Length: 252
Image 1 (tube, rainbow, N blue to C red):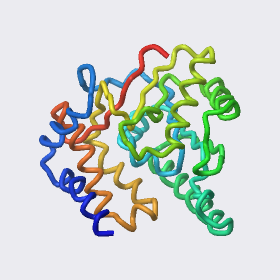
Image 2: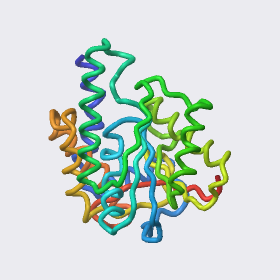
Image 3: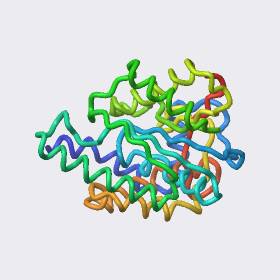
């Protein structure tokens, strides 16, 4: 227990640093290319693809608000229940699934998301197999998004959830297999961002949607520190207060 706390102290120390220093630290994480502010105004139909309820709000909630508040059509696909089925007894898992679905729908309503699509795969066991890729292909063909945002399957986070990686791989496979060639792909939770979206104006609304989730409310001061640290670090890279980092993939 004590050893675990000691190992976590450097991470906490990072998030107490001034934002401009965080930006310099982030620059050491194997970033490639020229980091620049992103122009996302050209997109009209945007699809976010995540693994669990609350992934979206934590990782790119500010970007979602920017799209929705500028009148764009925003869609969300959630591939697992988020019910911890792999670790919980069935009765408790069912309760968690229902609770997190309600929270996801409420957060989506606040953010201005037009539609949420749930695929309800068990949490913790997702694979980028034929079924998942086929579901993704069908979704792309139905929605025909201009831009797609999802996980980088090669995230720099060593503790990256395997469901996150599976979702990212499934999206890339679906794009490679399909005929939807006019969609731009953006990867979040990436170790190699090549652009930053300025979320200074939408950060307060991002925080509001995060508060919908009871698991975040329970540790609200820690989550606030994490969010300000990460967004402040990305923002410092383009000389704004808050940002969210992505890797735009030019050729699928």
